[in-house]
Amino acid sequence: MAATMPAPRIRKARVALFAVFGLNGMLSAVWIVHIPAVTARTGVTPTTLGMLILLMAACAIGGMQAAGPLADRFGSRALTATAATLLSVALLGPAFATSPVTLGLALCAFGFGNGAIDVSMNAQAVHIEREYPRPIMSAFHAFFSCGGFLGSALGAAAQHAHWPLHLTFALATVFGLATVATAIPRLLPHEAHPESTTPTDLHTPPHALPTTQRDSRAAERDLRAAQHFPPSPIESAISTPPPSAMSGLSDTTSAPRRAARKVLVLGLIAFALLMAEGVAADWSALQVKDRLGVDAGTAALAFTGFSLTMTLGRFAADRVSGRFGRVAIVRWGTLLAAMGFGLIVASGWLPLTVLGWALCGIGLSGGVPQVFTAAGNLGSANSATDMSRVFGLGYLGLLAGPAIIGWLDKVVPLTATMVVPALAMLLCARGARAVAARPD
Image 1 (cartoon, one colour):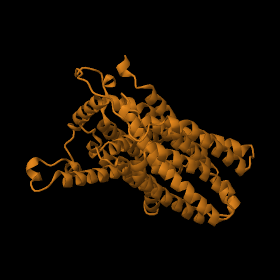
Image 2: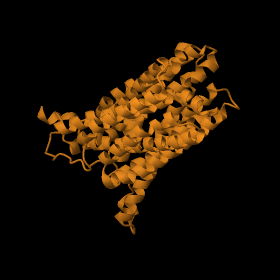
Image 3: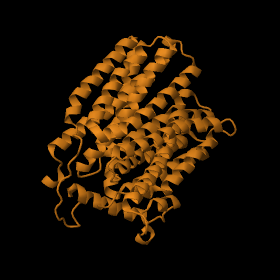
Image 4: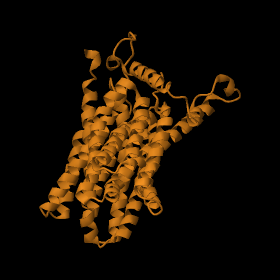
């Protein structure tokens, strides 16, 4: 049984990182639910708010790109501590902002911290997962969702009780700093040291294998899953060319190029997955209201179904990944999401439409963690930098998806625009082989 249990320091690091992911979700939600109050206090118009949110998004992308190289140099634990502290303190900015200019400066700091913590905490999650006997990445993202739910509930309760903005945000900041002080010392240092491998029978369960053997078994599962689909042209482009094709090229030249192409493909998959997630977050309730003519409260059931199944799916995705591999999670999950979007387009009945959004939540729940895991395990010395590039493309998808739907809604019915994320999910299913585990 000892072989099936990780070392105590690894278990403590896992729990500590759960707290960091939950903190990120909570702080983001506290800001989101207070947007109306902050804009009323600072006199920001809806148009100006849109520009400020875009500015915050640009700073978040900047934080992601800065965090990657810094995490590679100083370690993900140090960067997670710095980013979480910055995010916690930066939350005070919107509460004390008195004009559009001061609010814009506050959102720049908050966005930069949010982007930096996204990369650094996921890089730490990759370190911890390497030492764990089974996949655990999706559970971290599930705790982010739980933190978001907690932050939105507490923020709503504070507003219902008429607490001042300063008090609510100050309490959230204090809680954030306390979480950092408690959790960060338990995270793994700069390098996670893999356990030594010993010969093991092929019939040994995956969860009982040392780390490197577990990765080999994961690669075998991904290979079996990938054999059901021929490689796409994009996947063929990132595959290793045969030795005959390598004549005249040194390994030191070709390997970085292959890694760069793999990062690009993983980034495109992240772009599509987060684009679909952004569409669901921003347009699901409006789609139901527009198509079925129901009231706003009933229309909200669409996003409720999506977010609930998304959270539950993230808690279940690690076990599914451990059983069937990363490729299966991305391939069959995106096919399920495509089916959900198709049902949304075809349905004229509320329960069936809500079911479609729920299927989208299940299908999308496990994909992004698998992409980030693959990006952090490319074998590069700059794994956090690789992740930051994938994160950047994914975040662009999260921003672009709602905007694309808004543009298309001017020329076609809103429900018809759901064909776009459906097609994107089919393309993800076609390229799912890119997330396969690397054989040793």
